[in-house]
Amino acid sequence: MGSNPTLSVEVELNLIILDIMKYFRFEKLVRDSIVAHMEENNQKPTGVRTLSGEEFIAELIRKVIEEAKEMKGTMDREELKEEIADVFEVLDYLKEVLNLSNSEIEEIKENKIKKNGGFSSRTYIEKVGVTEDNKWFQYYLDNPDKYPEVK
Image (tube, rainbow, N blue to C red):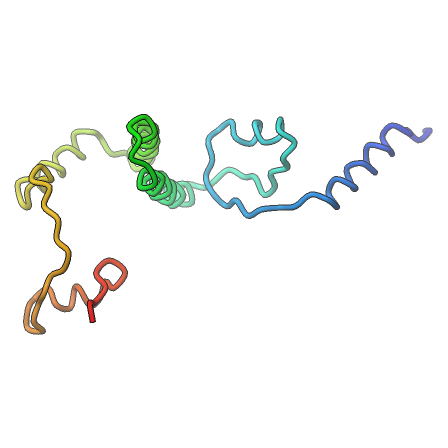
């Protein structure tokens, strides 16, 4: 069998491209068509795989946080609509994979509203003071990321 000079040139070009290509950590769940779009744009995604059930749930949770953080960066109504749609889509996948119905979620939501109210009064708390004998004292100490102590 003779050698194929076109193949040799192609292999050499690929080696040159790999040598000059910079890689950036991605490490996240992406939409179904993203890999193809990247390849069409001369990007080289690596480590592409299908997630297991538990991995998928964990990455959906990371994705909903990512999408919610993107909402924080804008007050533009159109951009917010896009981000809200993204959050809803990810939550829909979470409900599907966890086999949760809309009625289950609505029931929990209604129970929370009955117990503590909703958000219609727009109440905001800057700080809360508690004494060491208060039942909430240890809870606040145990959750410093959520409730950092004010010194």
